[in-house]
Amino acid sequence: MTDSEFEARATATLDAIEAAVAAVSDSGAVDIEIERSANVLTLELADGSKVVINSQAPMRQIWVAARSGGFHFAERAGQWRDTRDDGELLATLSRILSQQGGQPALLG
Image (cartoon, rainbow, N blue to C red):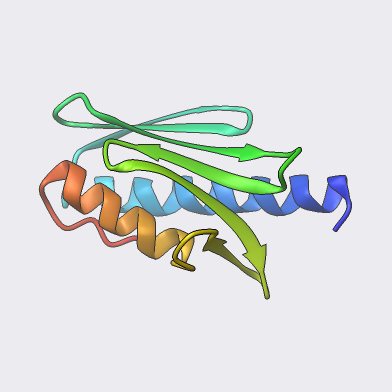
């Protein structure tokens, strides 16, 4: 994958995450404020805690920082998979937001 291909895929993924989180928040399931600055997506939950998602071009990964720890996702067979436990990105984010927010937050 070239640098430009990675950037396009990572941007599309961040766009999809932003839209999925907005849909969950708009439904009233979980109160999440969304802030986006280029390749960094910051999600602030009602209790003031944050989840930060960003692309790491040098590593060709998407990183997630949450109260429960840091997660690195690499693209494999068209999906972003956790480099440690092979979890899928949206499923992991759903789990993180549900745990951190105290309410179910199912993305995508």
